[in-house]
Amino acid sequence: MRPGWINAAALLTVISLTGCAGLSTHDFQSASSTPADAAVDYRPSAALAATPKQTDLWTRLRSGFALPHPTYQNRITSNLHWYTERPDTIARIVDSAEPYLYLITEQIEQRHMPTELALLPVIESSYQPMAYSPSHAAGLWQFIPGTGRNFGLKQNWWYDGRRDILASTQAALDYLEKLHTQFNGDWLVAIAAYNCGEGTVQRAIDKNLSAGRPIDFWHLDLPEQTEDYVPRLLAFSALIEEPERYGVSLRSIANQPALANVNVGSQIDLDVAANLANMPLEDLCRLNPGFNRMTTDPNGPHQLLLPVDREQAFTERLADLSQTQRTRWISHPVCEGETLVKIARDYNTNTSLLRTLNKLPGN
Image (cartoon, rainbow, N blue to C red; front, side, top):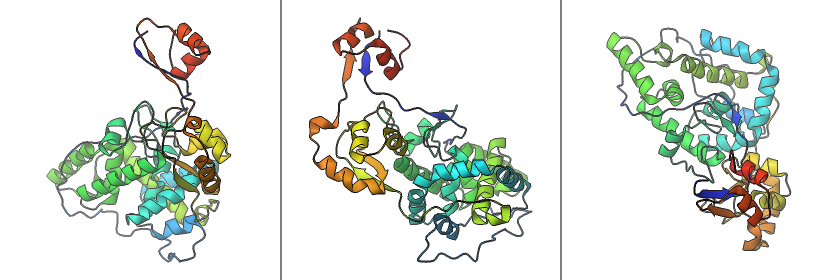
């Protein structure tokens, strides 16, 4: 066995979904362009104004919609049909998004960005925080490792910031703001670049500029996945904007915080935290999917997302917890020649459990 580390905490399970975000570096060459088929943009709910007493989060979201929705575009129409024929899929997405949607909408509004961007995780991950793609993209926003590091997402043995709800949302919005500026304020082009990478979009723009063609999203020659990616977002946004128009039953989501961000101060086992919060460990892990182990990173972050109705009791119980009660974690440095049999005997456990927890093929 190679020298290394053995641990006694289980890893969280990941779900394989599609989606990726690439990163490359090219400067955008600005040029004016008007889509040939964009004479009229479909904005059916322009009359829906935000009110100070909004109680429904969907209403609040609609009030910040700002992307053009040309629903006569065939690529949008086909995606509208796909969604409307799958009401169960929409219902599952709403259920998955509910814990996080208020938090993400808040961050988007603070930056004065189009609130349709709060629906981008629908396209990226179906709002599944443990989503993991074959291209190694992870989390709600599907960051690949390199792009995640470029936008400050810590990734190590203990923790993966790409799956951290708060950290990944901040990084995704940082990236989208950068792309929006880089591509001359065109949100659709910026969203396309989020999917396939800046370099791919820039080469498509350069090609159109050389040919004297428009450089809006609808005229760019992009990968097939990206050509469908932006219309899928616009189609789902149209459904949210006017569900009745499309025969969609949209369950209401309260316009109030569902989660509280609690600083626990130092490392803590997740099962200990779940007991303090009086909630199932599975639910706590679902809200805090950034932790790779069943304990938080000893070097931070030391924040946990908790349901708002659990925050006060959790904080009070945490204050009464001694430092020695916070963790039951043991890391064992494996020495040359050691076997799992010996380590299991030393720690009064069994080799099967150690293999499972450490994802080891042998002893």
